[in-house]
Each structure stands twice: as C-alpha cells, then as structure tokens.
Image (cartoon, rainbow, N blue to C red; front, top):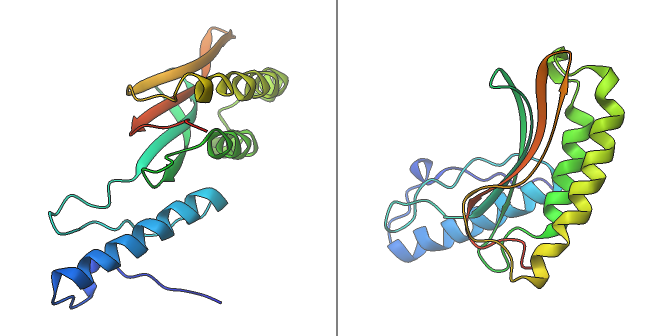
Length: 163
C-alpha cells in the first residue's frame, strides 16, 4: 500500500496539535525510509519551526575534496542511529562506489576490506555508551596513483550508536 506524505506547507493544519501529529508521522516516515534506503520529503516544520530534529549519521566515500558519495542514516532520537543502520549504509556505499566513474576498480578489494573493518569497529560504540560528538568518528584511507581515497563515518546530529 502506497502512502504519500506532503510537506506541512501543503496542508491546512489549523490547530498546532494537528501540526505536531503530522510532524511526528513525517519524522517516523523519514526514519523508516532511511532504514530501507528510500527517500521521503523532509518534515520541515514543527510547532517551533525547527523541523523534526532527527538524529543523523553519514557514511561517505571520498577522493580528496573533489568527489564524494554519501549515504545518510536517519532515526528518531530514541534510540538514535544504531550500529545496524550504519552497517546497512556502508553496504549501500559499497554498491554505489561506481557512481560517477571516478572510483578506480583497482581499489574494490581495499574498499571491501575496510568496510568490513569499519563494521567491526562500529561494535565498540554501544559498550562505551554510544557517540555524541559531531564530526568523523571513524576513517579509513589510502593513496592510489597519487590520490587520496577515504571512507568516513560521521556523526551529524544526536546521541547515536547506543545499540
């Protein structure tokens, strides 16, 4: 069954309680879509105009500052983005590596091995209480034919990797 979610601006919400319910449903839809790799329009407004404030992490493959492929994991604040969410995004990143034609096939093995390494290292965070600081939390890099290639895992917003 297909469910269509509109942005709040397209709805005549009237009462703020209705608006809050809409944002809650839209936020849940964003989290579910992130888990299955789909896109859902952002819920851009709540009662205080700040959006639905989902926890967010990103995995990305980069060649220097020139080329980037990124996959975002989004979840509600409780429990936040989990280790399994990030592992699923790493898998998507592996299959997306050939987008744009800039990632050399000679590095496929390097990428596979480092995704496995990062997936294992992600398991250390729940025992330590998760991660709250922003920025890169894990990185693997190599140089190939004079160019830097790296895989980054970033915590963009919220308390994540608690389980």
